[in-house]
Amino acid sequence: MELEIRLFATLRDKAGQDRIQITLAEPATVGDVMAAAAAAYPKLAEALDSSIVSVNKAFAGEDTAVHPGDEIAIFPPVSGGSDLPWPTYFAITTAELDFNEIHQRLVQPDVGAVVSFTGSVRGQTRRDGLPPETIYLEYEAYAEMAEEKMAQIAREIWQKWPLVKGIAIVQRIGRLDVGEITTFVACASGHRDQGVFDAARYGIDRLKEIVPVWKKEVGADQSTWIEGHYQPTEADNE
Image 1: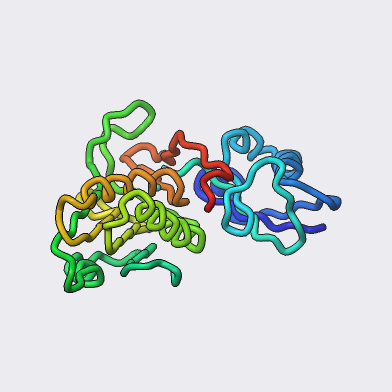
Image 2: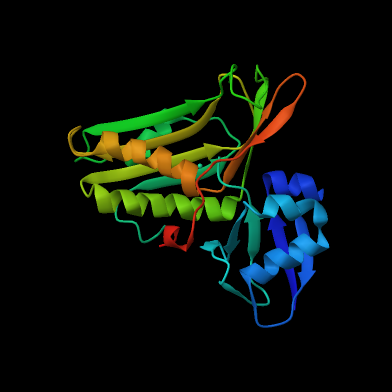
């Protein structure tokens, strides 16, 4: 069978393209996909050892079966629905954020508290291997899967903090200069003591674990893709 594989961030750069094709005999697994990709595209081989695979927008393990027509993606560790019971807003966007408009999506007559986290681009990183001064960040996302994972985070929040009533999770992509907003997470509830502070913190932490978004730090003399350390597994699917 012929399979097309989508590549993101570091892997796309190494391959010099955002999609590759491999041929496998049936039946086949994710492990077979990775072995075939390493053999066909040697420049990817080292990076594949620490990469994450999704099949049809769900995290996949080595033994996960693959079939003709599956949507397969390989990407580095993340640097971050209609069945949802309360108001939500999930977005992958290049646009500047209107915080008041997002808050209004969450506010209802029984909501008296909205707690939010806002991330922005730092100009000075001061970490080994990164430019000493950042000129801008370049964000990339596997958008279709990212919004599904945002909805999953909302469901996880409601399991932990059932009094939270509304959730917004937004990730900006593209070029973002120093001082520009990168991420926004907000949680709403009737009162401030109903879990919204912890829920908002959980939301941004979980975004950086399972939402397929990556960033490249660009300095005057170098640029580096930032990869996380968390390795999602099939247990991170719902």
